[in-house]
Amino acid sequence: MPINSPDIFCYEIKVEPVATIASNDKYDAIGDILPIAGTNCKSSVFTTGVLDDYPGATAAYSLRRLSSSWTGPAIRVKRQFTFDELDIGFKENGDIDTETMIDFSGGDAALFVSTLYDQTGNGFHAISQQTFGPRIINTIATPVLLEGKISMVFDGSNDETLTTDLLTEFDNTDFLVNVVYGGVFGGTNAFAMGSTGSVPRLYFQDDRWSYNTLGTMTWTDVTAQNVMQYQVNGATQEAFSNNVTLGTATEAQVDFTPTGFILGRIGSATFMDGKLQEVIIYTSNEVDNRIGIYENMSSYWL
Image 1 (cartoon, helix red, strand yellow):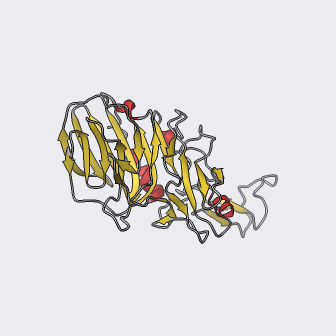
Image 2: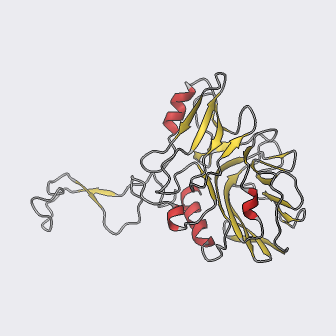
Image 3: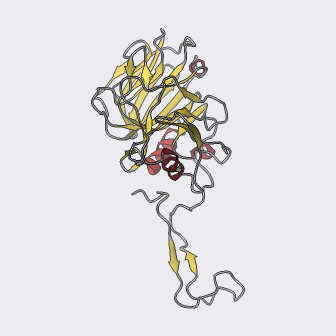
């Protein structure tokens, strides 16, 4: 478990009087709980997130809180059978409120994500285009997990969420797209996200990246849980998995036809068949910040 996991708390129980603590200090009695000084441990209360440390993101979707400025929910879920919907927020430490989802499921119905809220405040919310979006709570009232942490799972046949105006933000600009995903479950597309099939294309996948042209670069598919990053710096494209370069290409920047930006599908019928935990998009040059963003995402999820 990463040292900064929200499940790790660093305290010690005082069993002897501490001379340096004044008698009126709140830690002046034997048996008081004292924070251990000098340790790299996460507070139980959320203070700042990756968007505070690396501001300026265009859109950000996650199953954790990303910003101290975002006070809205993480997602909206829809209940199987009844189709009731409920916004789901965060716990005090910034984790998503899994307990509320389990209670809402009633123990006998799955929950599906109907909206992924954009935590940047820019309003690029991703909304399901189907009766049910990706599943997040199983029918037996257990959360969908990826390597022990909450996740959404896409079924490979029709799960998708759409944000209608986001695609044009990629026009003629540097950008960095950061994603945490993993797993292939009966299909061939561990990850799929991008445009609806317009030319020029913008497809992000687990084994290729199409920027303007189809299959601008390809690599051996990455299906294990990882932080995938897709970077445009001028006319150079580069893809990374867990901070290791997968490939580079050279393609001039272009305008993208505004037909929508999809999480869980590319083109007309290539659906994702894996699990997704986080997507953070910058439509700016983040070359100097890429590694720091990767380290923040990996320390929480991997």
